[in-house]
Image (cartoon, rainbow, N blue to C red; front, side):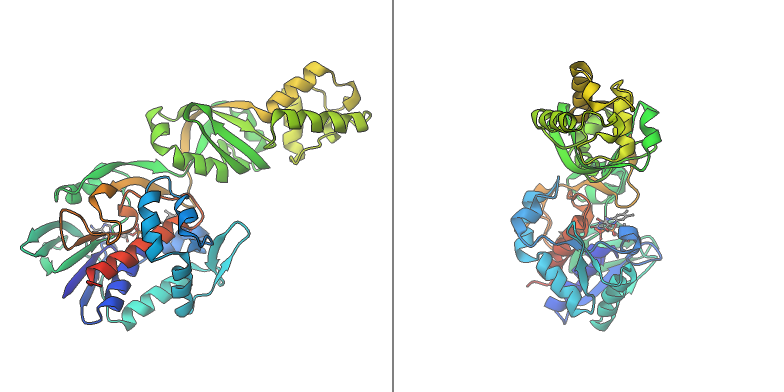
Length: 404
Ligand SMILES: Cc1cc2nc3c(=O)[nH]c(=O)nc-3n(C[C@H](O)[C@H](O)[C@H](O)COP(=O)(O)OP(=O)(O)OC[C@H]3O[C@@H](n4cnc5c(N)ncnc54)[C@H](O)[C@@H]3O)c2cc1C
């Protein structure tokens, strides 16, 4: 049996390895259009490769995918994080877990991951061809003919497409030509550009437990909020950008972000502030924050609410306190535009999931044709979830293509 995998990224490697592991007699060929294998693995996680996330329960893991979570829940029951960890350990890649659950190789180098994948592919006899893009695919009886960039063609019994995401719809034209439905791509994982640039003086400041809310979309996210020279960034912003990817495009990235800098309800904040200032009435306002906030941000909020930094806390009147409290829990920031998050961006959209069987990753209308990885309309938030989706779908597609 001839199995051809199209695309030499994370999903393509796992698909090829799985096909060979499940059917050692099959001829497995991996085609990569560029001159590099695993290019994204190399640059991922700042060169460290955030291989997966330490979430061992498939149901909970699936909750980190704005698109494709339900589809993946079934897939994770076949190949989940623990299988990924075990596979890499069996191939001499020890993984470590950071405090936030992200898992990296203990070497802190993506090269370790690349070496393991390439070494195993060579050992198991997978043929790999670089500079070999596929430009068209035609069913031919029970087989497929692949037209290559080089104006030659090859035949295969089974084809696994792992060509990754593409920012433009025409990047999927050759798949649409087969009748495969495509969900138009939109960017995910970006940061928010603020219209009012005055906050740029706070560049680099982190509010450790902020809540960011986009009321119009009924979306909110909590965590360390990073101020940049263009606006808002950090994990809660990236999560919102992923969950709101389509709706935010629909409003042309113009909306209001409500920031609760301290992650507390207003009443709780009021009690905390009043108690602290009653206990230390002589303290100057600049030294009077009872909240977990960097001093520069506290000073900025005092200025914005019109409270002099040197004013004794006990002398600050109700009106000023209310204004400060309002800013602390409901600071409104008009947003216009986005900035792509360079560390880890993905494309939402791709092959529509209703066309694919989640237990085999086979295209329902085209037997023998399988899809895996980011080419599917699946994307996760940051933290190793995108690679986990690639490992899982790649492994299942390879296994199914091998007939196992
Ligand atoms: C800078 C950056 C950092 C990231 N960091 C992380 C991270 O740390 N953790 C995480 O979970 N996710 C991360 N991601 C996301 C993650 O890299 C992707 O989700 C993942 O690589 C998808 O794997 P894939 O195999 O589906 O696609 P890709 O890795 O995109 O691989 C697809 C391959 O197919 C090839 N190809 C395309 N078309 C054709 C064709 N017609 N014929 C032949 N070959 C073709 C491409 O050249 C490419 O090599 C990061 C993304 C970026 C851009």
